[in-house]
Each structure stands twice: as structure tokens, then as C-alpha cells.
Image (cartoon, rainbow, N blue to C red; front, side, top):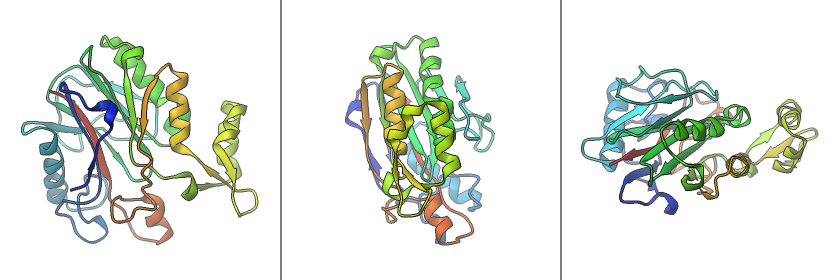
Length: 254
């Protein structure tokens, strides 16, 4: 089972992991650690995969994921829920031990947060829509309501699509330039006319820094390029596959 860790999140008070696609029980295009209940995979297999991931964090962990909608919505988690019954949101925060906050991705950027001094954690799904809408900013603000201080928050950006593999059109780029003209720095010209390549990871780093987070660890692991390690929506689309798996990234307080 592939599990990446961020050095700035290694702490006795928390457990975390950016899981890849290996070490599960799913087959075919979902092979093998598919943790996405909305993927079209067999529900029983997804439940087993999620159990395996949770057990890597803690023998008694409860892995929780929300119904992600590419928004800036954040929920404060106090109790668990059954798989598939999470709120419509793209980030979670908690100060309760034993609850593994999980983010499902297949090219979008998972961001895990921790203020170990305050005992507050967060997790965000930063696709381009959520990122430009401020999902990371909203996650930080929600952590502060639980007692976190942004000067003490560490954040890590997990596996996501790299700039080399993220070609976008003019409408996409215009959305970012309308938000801030300086966002042009996250785009480089593509070989195709009127197309660019977008640096999602670096944009998320920028949003975190602008929000006052100094302790940031981007893992720079490309989901598109590393087929053996990660699921990728764009890769599946290019191959005209009917669906795709989702890897999970999770964090919990001990």
C-alpha cells in the first residue's frame, strides 16, 4: 500500500496519510484501493478499501468523507456518519480525536492541515473551482473558530495533477485572471493555440501563503503521470474509460 507522508505533519498528536491506489481489493479500472463511493465501484469493495486505509492511521479510526461539490463549503465535524451520508462540502475541521477527515481526489489537490498545539485539524478538497473560490482560506478560518492559530498551522498538499499535464483553455484562464491579474504567473503557454498549462499545486501554495500559513509542504506527486500509483480523472478521460477510482488523503487527532 502506497502511503505518502508530509514531514511537517509528522507529530505524536496526529496521524495522516496521502494514500495511493495500491493495496486494496477493487479490480479493473478501480484497481485497487478505490475509496470513492461515487465511483461506480462495488460498494462492499469500497467499504473494505476505506477500512484498510483507516486502519493505517489507527486501529479504531472512523474514516469520514463529505459529498464533494467543488465549493468552498466547510463543515465542523463532531461525530461520524455512514459512508455516502456526508454533507455537501469540500472541507472539514475538527478538534475531536479518532475522527479521520478524508478527502477523495483523482487529480484535484488534497490539503491536510494541523495545529498540533491547539489540537485542531482540517482537510480540504482543492480542485480548481474550490481553490479559486477560497476553500483553503475557509478551512483555516473554520480551524480558528476551534482555537487554532494560523501562525501554528502546518499544511501539506498531496498528490495532484502537475502543470505539465494540466492543459486548459482560455475560459479557464480568464476565470483566474478575473480573480486576480497576478494569477497569470500560474499559467505557461501550451503547444496548442489559445491553451495554457496550469500549476494547481503552486496556486494552492500561493493561497495558503496569502492566508498567512508559513509551514507548507507540497509533495509534488503527479496523479496523471504516475499511473501505477494514483487514479487520474484526466487520464481516464483521455482514454475514454467509463469511470475512475479515487484515492483518499486523511488526517486524525489521536
